[in-house]
Image (cartoon, rainbow, N blue to C red; front, side, top):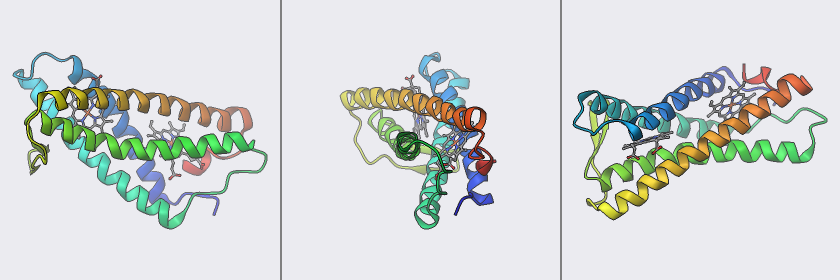
Length: 174
Ligand code: HEM
Ligand code: HEM
């Protein structure tokens, strides 16, 4: 197999757009005025709902990847670059699945349930705990920063394949 199907391509670009928006929104929330501000409340609602959407889409992608596998790398790519790309993709999966769960737990430790666009609420599984909420806030921030680094490395990889090697790898996700 040397191609991704249409469904996986659509999922890739949909998640890419949502994740960039989600990181921007998260950063805005972290520096926004206190939560009693109505706009902050709404942005926070969107952040929770988008987090759930990204989680569901990533789990779907994981199932597709486990069933269908990944395309073979083109000939001539150095072994270490191939290994680095594989690691980059695996870590993106891991962190994009972990991050909404950390957000949910962080939210729970702060005494809130997980509201999915106001239509559905997932109750917290942990009791309110200020110390844990602080630790999970740090974890959510650290994973957010790690995601930014992974995405930048991913873009570097796309540049390497698309501009330097011109080997058709970028086209197979287009
Ligand atoms: C893939 C999904 C998610 C991504 C990529 C993401 C990313 C981020 C980022 C980058 C920040 C800014 C952190 C900082 O600089 O302090 C943030 C803040 C925040 N996120 Fe998320 N997030 C996701 C899902 C969620 C979910 C599902 C929840 C809650 C149910 C949540 C709750 C929060 C809260 C409360 C903040 C405000 C700042 C704080 O107190 O930590 N996040 N998010
Ligand atoms: C910005 C957020 C992005 C995220 C979170 C992301 C995430 C991912 C993930 C997880 C994979 C692995 C898919 C799999 O094998 O199951 C992947 C593959 C890929 N991505 Fe992205 N991506 C992003 C942006 C981009 C951009 C902007 C480009 C191109 C300019 C790009 C080009 C590709 C290509 C070509 C592949 C396939 C590589 C191969 O065939 O081995 N991605 N991406």
